[in-house]
Amino acid sequence: MAKYLLLKHYRGGPTPVNDVPMDQWTPEEISAHVQYMEDFAARLQETGEFVDGQAVAPEGTFVRYDGEGRPPVTDGPFAETKDLIAGWMLIDVDSYDRALELAGELSAAPGAGGKPLHEWLEVRPLLTLPPTVTD
Amino acid sequence: MDEALLRSLTPSVLGILVRRGADFAAAEDAVQDALVEAVRVWPADPPRDPKGWLITVAWRRFLDAARADTARRRREDVVDEEPEAAPVSAVDDTLQLYFLCAHPSLTPSSAVALTLRAVGGLTTRQIAQAYLVPEATMARRISRAKRTVSGVRFDQPGDVATVLRVLYLVFNEGYSGDVDLAAEAIRLTRQLAAAIDHPEVAGLLALMLLHHARRVSRTAPDGGLVPLAEQDRARWDTTLIAEGVEILQAALARDQLGEFQAQAAIAALHADAQRAEETDWVQIVEWYDELARLTDSPVVRLNRAVAVGEADGPHAGLAALAPLDDSLPRHTAVAAYLHERAGDLETAARLYAEAARKAPNLAERDYLTRQAARLNSRSR
Figure 1 (cartoon, each protein chain N blue to C red):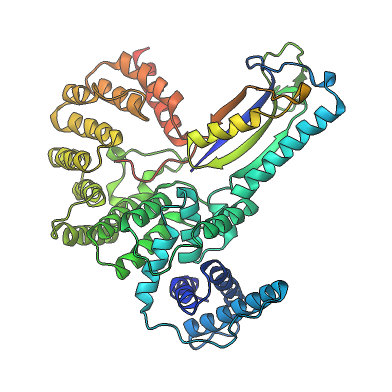
Figure 2: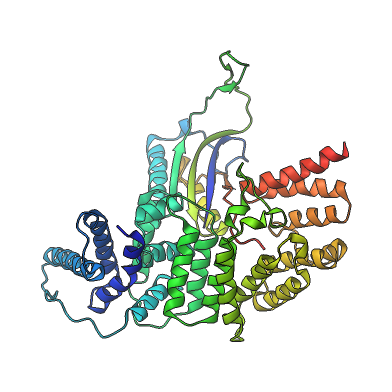
């Protein structure tokens, strides 16, 4: 049992096979895509493997400490940021192979022309607590 | 309100319902309902016969649910009367439940969840919190697991080894929440040991007790990991150690060695050393050789390399490490340690830093990073 984060990137990963920007799709294709994502999450809830899924806005603000008694300094958004997270799904599965299998399914979400996106998803294991038996 | 007593009654109550003809999934739901009801009612109105109370309430819940179900399906073939349970002991029922909940058709995570609920009497919410997943997810996982085993005959003999693997997972997975999973694993293994006389069950129980005995000394006040050699051995729980050693000796005397007995023997040798320097590493290497014969696990050979390093010196340890696949978890950490012992501090520092990047958990990463930092700050 292990938790994995399936990360979807706006950019930063390799280019998907079906690389047409979403605003060039038909409304029906967008609906089909959204439906696929919802069905996928629902299916994982059904199998008892779903932990969380969220999408995040592309524009964010960088913040840092600026010394005692001073408000934090903000900067950005930076249009040139190379790696941009679009959202994630957190899963709890029996094996790394199962995490890959699910990421593969999620990457098959339909895009332009109703064809699979073949989008690159990043699979990152969550760090756990240490096991009890180590010797 | 004795929650431990309540939960210890769970398997036999469930067993009785199944013997009376309830299907496992429905009976399990009914017992959960009865447990929840007991938690609500018992504090103000404790029953004279807790088990009898649970059986009555659970059976009533089962019948209510079955009637509702029957009405829905417009069928009337459910027996209303309370049939006599077949004359089978509670011990046998308990054992059958362990087998069913660890059935080989279940994935490890499903078997763990089902065991904790149906045998352990934990609620879905408690299990979900322990494993840090939403309650809805855990509820689905458990109901799928029940569907998976619904066709399995309750009186079918099972394989103890599958049960032990499930209990070991519960013990070893470091998650925590409201429920102390390590303590729960020990309770369930004790209960299993009372139901079946088997040297590996005893071996696993001994292993758990011996590791549990060191628990408080494994963590520094700041939450950091304290390795075995640096633990304050005065804080080890000598009562648990004595019990673990006694159980292990009785098991070993039967001359049916298995992996859990061998692992427990290694833990017992560590427990036996008053100071880290007094550890009998030669004997520990011999036990790792036994373990390697029993399991052929690469992790065992990795741990063996550490023991060889202690018994015969770091160069012998590095030689034992050399043939192993360096992609094994903790391989780099072991290499770093052996290089430090061999006096090659520069290589050790580099390997500690690399091992930290690959560490599967935060506590190990922090520990390894500190090791790298210690060596790096020394050489400056």
